[in-house]
Every structure is written in structure tokens, then in C-alpha cells.
Length: 141
Image (cartoon, rainbow, N blue to C red):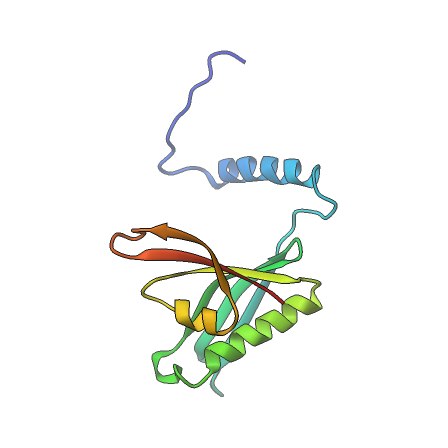
């Protein structure tokens, strides 16, 4: 393999991105008993018109639930909707065979909320974004 170049791709072709990811997935599949497939999990709060007022987005993978996003409309905050979303997600994750959950939050978001649900910090990025911290949390379910 000679004449190789390394380049920064500002506008990569989606096929090129998939080519890299597929190689990682193939490698992972050769080292794991389970296939490297993540299953989406979406739980929504809707009104009778179908409008969304909150939701949780995540995925289950290798016995873990990853919560990537949790949002509740300002008018509904403090009414336990966030807790209900998290508990429903944990329940569904158990149904899917998961025994753990992980997520991240920023110092200006919901650290205390997650800790009140039993999540424990396992990592912190200081000054990310500048002036704040990013916390990584996990919980056994």
C-alpha cells in the first residue's frame, strides 16, 4: 500500500461515511457474540391533535440502553413527565434484554434530575462547552 494520502473531507459522500462505518461494524461483529445492531427507541408525549410536547430518543445495543435525547416542553416541566419518559424507556430496555442505561448531560441541563433517578457519574469533560461540563452517567436497571 503505497501512495496513500490522508485528507480532511468537509463534504464527504454519504457512501464514504458508510464505507468506514461498515468496516468498524464488521470488525465488531467478529469480536462479539451478538450482531452490532442498535435498535431505536422513541417515546413521545402527544396531545389529542398529535402535537409533540416531549420525548425520549435512544437505542438499545449489546444489553445497554443509550438515551441520546430527552426533552419536555417548558409548560410541562416539573410535572414528572421526564421521569415517566425515563421509566418507560428503562422498562422497554428491560423488555429488550438490557440491564444498564447510559446517557450524557451538560451542567446547564439535567444532572440533578438524572441523579435523582439513580444515575451515577462515570465521567466528566471539563470546560465542554467552555464554562460548563459534560457529564456521563450510567445506571443498572
